[in-house]
Length: 232
Image 1 (cartoon, rainbow, N blue to C red):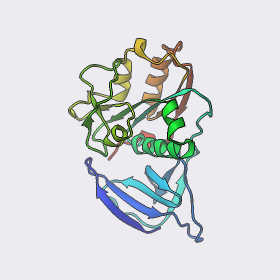
Image 2 (image 1 turned 90 degrees about the vertical axis):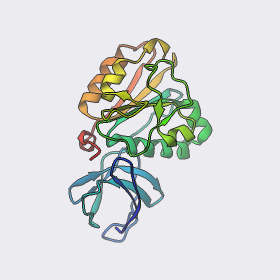
Image 3 (image 1 turned 180 degrees about the horizontal axis):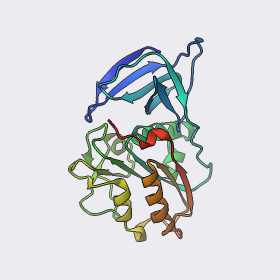
Image 4 (image 1 turned 30 degrees about the vertical axis):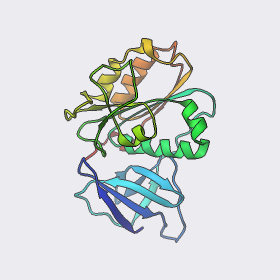
């Protein structure tokens, strides 16, 4: 697998592009819930267009062409439930991949009808520069106004939690931010919660969202080794 460097990201990581060709010369495909493993390194996939992928890697590592696709597909129930997407650290680019994938698979109209909100967190820094959001989320603490440029451009409501004192972000962990959400203002529609994060985040999400079981009545959680990693 040959890599090409696309850009250096704000958190010091690098965005690469590559065509997934196996040792046998076969073209590989990936779906959300999977990631790359290169020489024992677990690397999140940001985007995939057929066999051409974009993935994120730390600046200080040297990449080889030996790779494997790891992880199980993340299956989203095909129903009318709203989607609340929650991700931290290495789960953030994986969530962006999920958003791209669902918009392509379902079409923009169906995705927008099912989408509810996105909550993102990082211990150190995001792979993007946070921007003030123009989309209201009244259940959030009033000082939490930052979102991701990609999500803002798509018109998707999102908020950020950061351990690095980033302006407009919740100051602290995503797990802590979830505990301060005003569930009284949450959607009354059946909502599926997708969580891409550490076991700590999973436990916090289960506790908080189950306490609002009258409005959030379906919970799909995902935990895997790559999600225990920080962004560096």
